Image (cartoon, rainbow, N blue to C red):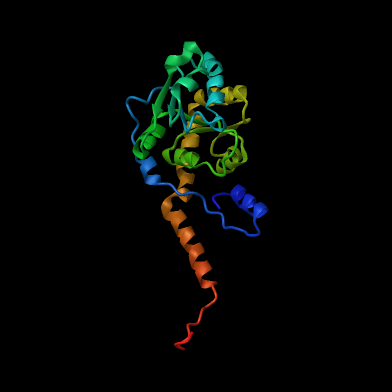
Length: 233
């Protein structure tokens, strides 16, 4: 199971148990990426996901934007991922429409550059997550995170040690948390350093080794099957 939450769900629905091993990432890809000249502007917030899915929470971020802009006037938001841009744009304050840019689908290399280019990554998801691999990618890139306090995200961010948490579905609390972080360069730097250091455990080299160990233990515990020599067997 990719998280303790996923393990608990598995145990609740099936008569079985699981070993918790997180999803793996290409840590070097995110660490070595370079910021994009086009995307890297001061006070830029990043969001990634299928933004028309309500549970991904883009609407909550857009609702928070006018409050954020009141205290951080040069705020910009980059939205990466598939979705209906016209439909999503309905939730943007008209006076701030020029500050939201939709990038569409981006490649893994572009994603790494995206995370290096933004000031803060916001994950306003409202539920339905068992892990949160984008958060581990942010940690690897050294990107400060603001995330909703849903159980899966709180677990990855160690209840706020690795990133800032806000009350899920509360646009005002999201705005407050983002403003505080954008105004505190030392806090962003601290989160960046902690994230890079912590992300090592999510690298595929470590994760694959854990998965291999589980298969080895499972294989060693399998009953031996003897093969008979009788032609009638």
